[in-house]
Image 1 (spheres, one colour):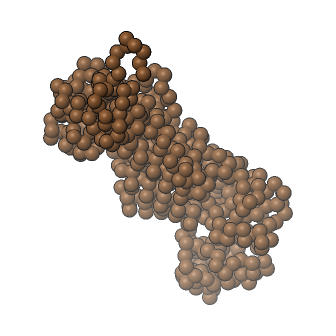
Image 2: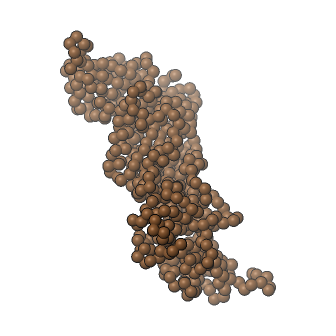
Length: 88
Length: 88
Length: 162
Length: 162
């Protein structure tokens, strides 16, 4: 739990590659209140300016591992939206 | 055809690895007369001192390629008897 | 707009990622042992074309801590499934045609397991490790490669001016 | 008795055989090209045991001109069957534990064909290229390895004193 007087609890949202370009940033902090799943984080980002072009099928990761839309998230978690992978 | 006065036509027989040790030599010259197949070359070598321990299933090569027992051979050919291969 | 992450992150592990040229022999040496004499390996080398267009240059970016974590997962999975030792390394940053982008080396006692595990690692790496590739073409345009949609990014006019 | 042929033959091709240490990168470099970015390779490294016995040293001998001819056949077969470029190299002579005995590198446009062709080449090499291995054990005995009959050469007392 954050100490009294610190900023409200948030979920750290990371954007990469084309998604970072679409949103104009690589990092956002989403107020955690009322956010329960990774899918809700994705919908929140897609509602931002530029976010509509993030594909419905975007990959989502929670705390460094791939996760489903229904994966639970909470304050302090790191959620990443990943464009189609192109390594290798 | 060999020029007059040269040695009689032969088949060059090569032995390798354990077969060379069994026969005590790496090379034999077999008079070609009456020898028609690779299998006959193998039987000739197996009848030599030390040759009986050459396996019935020895590999045979004619002129640098694997060959069946029935492969035709003639004077000037190179026939090799190959113990089980162990490359790699 | 911040520039996308093409560098490795300060403080994160760098076991499976590198910005330096990849030398396959360092990986094969790392996995070979007296009891593991069968070594299968794979190299992915930067090609000069993509969807019929000439590639001039490219840059790999990554989600560094996750790429490390998932690479470690994949190596562990292979080592649990087969009696092998795995090494893998992906290069990030600016690469040129002919550079090695990724290398996998797997050593075991037998060929079967070395080949199967090597293939497993490269397939899983491509499907799971968060790495992205931005290509620059001979006509000056740039785009993010999307292997899930061959050619689609061109039709969708996702190409952006640099 | 003449000593078995552990040297390469004067005048014969030496494309696929060598008495010097094998460097995998020379093979991968030889097959990689801008249009062939997927490179699968295999190394066979000398192990320290065989049928439960400790190997001290070993020597590979070969039927040199046939080994070259058959190696060339195998590379050609793979290059006809798949759109790939193949390099293979087998070391002969005296080797020690940890030395690379054989290396295969195959480059293609796609992983599938590179892996399939690499596997094809090493399997065919083992089955067709005339090379033999004489091992010396910790107890001083020596024998010719027979992969077709695991352990049989020991039961048959084929071990010969050096």
